[in-house]
Image 1 (spheres, each protein chain N blue to C red):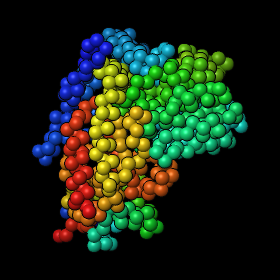
Image 2: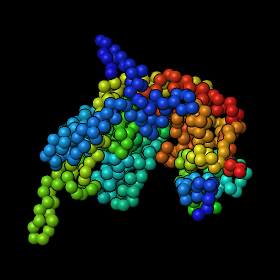
Image 3: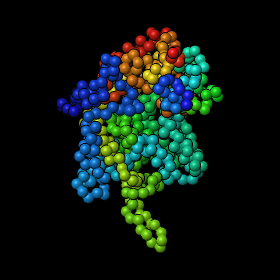
Image 4: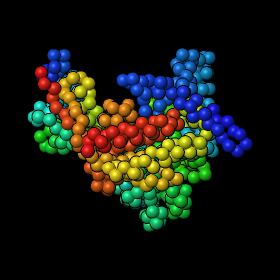
Length: 422
Length: 86
């Protein structure tokens, strides 16, 4: 898909868009403008085909069944883990655990990582509820301290705040790599360096980062990373927990049962299990084979375009949108407008309507522009910014299949909304 | 079972949708923010439990429009919602 001419990578973005059949639809005679990829990315034919191939050609259990279908399912399942490991540059594919979503990945670490008694967890006011609540509850469960680093009003972090908060008592830092509200990218490398210097582990919430930027877990040296596959053109109900092998080995298991064991002996009227190493120790029971195969296909698809190119493409659309929105005096953008530290999304409120939901409803009804309104599961930052969460903010997010025409229609919709509501 | 239309009863609707209907039963027409504010009051606390972020709630209101049970109109300040007359 991406072709290299000397050092210049050329992506045929029109061809990319054509991979997404949902965009062929018209509603009320108008094209669809899908700007809700931060919630759910559309799925390309390549991913759907890979999953259909499993269901149609070899819909069997992987790992156990000796027959041909079983062998093909096992091979495809294993190959997908390898594809995903390459996507995030994990040192070994066994460091990638299949989960249901980033939320489950975060919960697994929060509930099962070995954190010393009396230690401290640090998280932030900008976390998705899935990035903060599991750690709030872990601290409550084990009587650990928890400290919150406040994001700046523009969604960035002051590195001095991290230096102050992370001390020798800190056992784990959970931080959102790219915010699903402000789109701001956290200075992960610096945070990891400070944390490791003081003996703390770092859990990176990459749900919004992995689909839109090149993610190299080894270069960043994060200890854990949580990824939602449905946000990166893959199937719903699939996620990944990346963990350094040494940490995965020391973590307690979350579920027990079939496929997690090397042996289950029966001696002296006792059942005595011997458990497998990661990833199997975290993948109990029948797995979502089609989902894992789709996840591998999604990783491969995005890599065929090029993550650096994807980042550039989204930022170019964001720049176009921001340029015009900053001139709209009724529109207030939440977070920085510095696109060099942003994922391709913009969150905002409009003065002329009292609720963000009115903006989302109007854009959908009148322009087929699909955006998200609400608190985006980030209550604390809305409260911090004194925005009533139930009135919410509007988020427009751009991805590989969006183009300048989408941005133009979105901006036309905003103009029409302001005129009609003033 | 309370009928909300010839083909629908209250139990056919989501809890959020029931909440929107209850609120609109007691008013002429309301803006989105007025509905959300009322949903947070003690009076509707039992029925209206999913309105913290407002989104699921407004999605339910839009579904009621699709079902022909309420109407919405956009104007100064945003949408106004009301029960559909007979």
